[in-house]
Length: 235
Picture 1 (cartoon, rainbow, N blue to C red):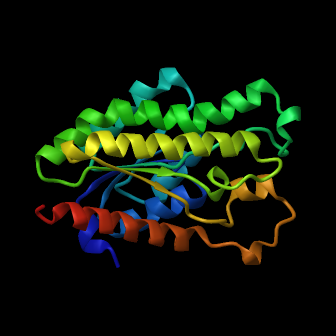
Picture 2 (tube, rainbow, N blue to C red):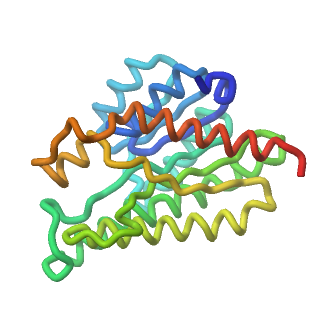
């Protein structure tokens, strides 16, 4: 459906070996994009890369400050630049979910490290590549995956909610600052999906009521395609 928009685009996806991230990697690969994906489990990274020939798997943890530049260098290196970055990797914080008063400081910090600082650092490290794409007249889009928990107050979801709210607002500020340079940032809530992360948070949830990651991935790619088309129209 989005083949022509994404054919030949250089796209990086974090959290790319399961859930929404994996669905995005699969659909982007099918659409002819050049895809690099990042995830923590090296074995799973290798398996996904092997199943999708031509994609580039990078083992790394976006929550680790020291891993940021090695990841960014590998992403830009294997793709030859970056047109689209999807910051999808997420942490729930405490598992099982806990009220804020019972949340360990370390669990709160872990949610912030993965969901806010990780996207901040990686976007910052790849801004040069994105700005270069914009100067060449190519798309330059960063997508940060948020959640309705960033807006609504759900008991037990405090660490996750606070981190996603910070991510959403950081995205809006960055879009305001970078739009004049041709780089766009969007926050996207993919909805409640049938993913390992959701099962970890709510093991008793009715899976039949949840969206399939492939559906959410298709919706997100349509949104990105819309932003790219909008930017391509002369002001």
